[in-house]
Image 1 (cartoon, helix red, strand yellow):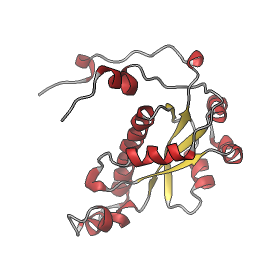
Image 2 (cartoon, one colour):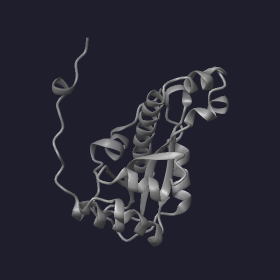
Image 3 (spheres, rainbow, N blue to C red):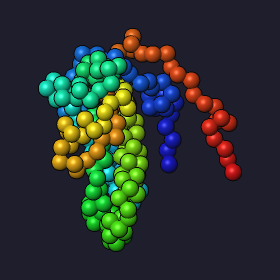
Image 4 (tube, rainbow, N blue to C red):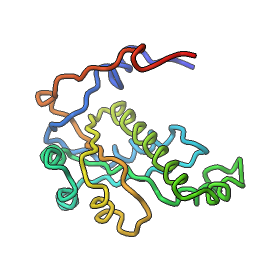
Length: 197
């Protein structure tokens, strides 16, 4: 397998930043579709692909988000060209006959699990997929601002009223304003966060 060069690593990780300020520059809907088409190829357990995304782009849809946002997240979210609601489908296992044909019994196996176990699987899978969305967005020239400062129940009531999905996190997308970046936060060294056994 070919490895990425330093420029690619800088773009995706080493120089990439979490943005809180945004340029007044729209994100084309075709780019959002391309973003999903790239991100969906990342692996999930048994190819369950539980992530669902609502790309909140219009001014009216953005206003529907406001009541759910923590006060400190309102300005940056309203300024971002797009806010992606990264969510998980509750009954993600219903799609396994199509998504995981290698093991035909998998749908029944997951359906037989306790609901809390399935919900955790959906949360883990949609979290992984949401991380793929961040990396894919950076690879396609977009900046990202992931957020947890919001009321999930309010977002779910407004955007997933049928209960089929539950929100995981919010992700502002667009072209960041570098002048509004916070200083980069520190990271743990290998020995502080990892061990090899």
